Image 1 (cartoon, rainbow, N blue to C red):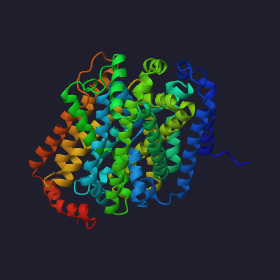
Image 2: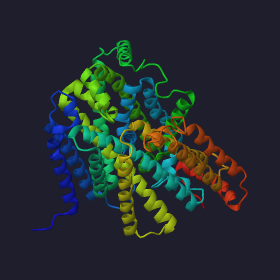
Image 3: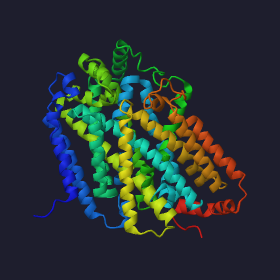
Image 4: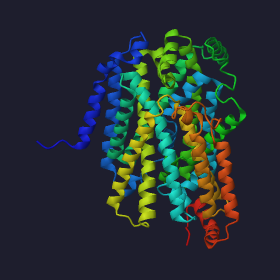
Length: 556
């Protein structure tokens, strides 16, 4: 008898863990708090089906991957419709599906600001960046920035920024999946985080970008359908009338001491926080590495623009659904004493408002289906994040910076796998430290850093001829370090993670301060740069412009 393949053994282990869940769930928080019937075997079966689908897709994709390029992208093989679904699926993560609706249930109007903010960045991507990214990039953000700027330092900066953003984004997903597993199966939070973290690393190792892309497309379709049904169920309680919905949610929200949900100020209590969060969410999209790399797979510039169009359409629909789910859930959760008790007493449970709504509206079967979709969403997004971060290490730092573009392919793949393992382990550790925090708020911090570090450098290097390597590095690092410092001193980290009494930075996002710092740094150190490298950077702008707009030519 042949030895059991290690990958197959790992897959069987995870299936066995999930199959044992009903026994663990006997004392689960959900069963203890909800007297309603919860069909634990049905929920477990739905989760096992998701894991099986993920592993099968990974295995098929691993067999289909044919070239080294498949470690980073699909070799220009997806249509605009497919790529649009993949881009949108990479963008609306578990934090969007679970976190935004939870913020609306808790804070009303201010939670809706996050939903609108997540959508607001797409016009910038569609009108300004999609075509240029496709024409200038190959594997990573560093490829785009290094087209006319000095390769080694700018790639190091892009890789550092990508890793920081990736880790923060992964941390938010880990919070959601840990609470999801604990809520449904009764495992301890740390066990859920560790199990899914290991599962994600196995999945990425099996299938790479090919598997992650197709899982993202599949989960995007499932998520859009599931969210549509859930939103219809939510507003059905109010007779599908906006006036009835607004008056009903106002009455329920006020009755439990939360105030008017349609009035601003519950979460973003000052204008600085409101503007800063909005700016971070609008500009941060253009700095997310796992979203940007999707445009490199478009076969031509037109397909890149159409991919952005489809991604914008799907994202718009999804965030409209999130608003409906959030306000509709107020009627089910705050209007039912049992669910209100769950919402108040279950630690970290405010992230699970969508699942409470699904159970209240459709029982255990509907809850199991929505939970399975949420699980697939988180798994697919985490896979894309890990691959984007690993590409920054293996392609930018090893293949280009260390080996000057002449790497050993086998060693490059090995480094990519090790980087993915390290990112997964770091994400698990960070997820364990942020159990009580809202997922959408954590993601907004990742957006703040992406908007402060990547966005100013990307925009000015593409559209401002006088931008130089020195200016891009000084401004980029100024934005990155200021955003990281202020994020560390903000309430989610300083109070939520480090358990200090009061935050030293009083605002919800650092973007209003860190983005101007980055822009000022790029401008000042570019206009004062008289070096030979600065002249070369400016001379290369016209060639970059032609390449960015036509896809033809290059720097001599």
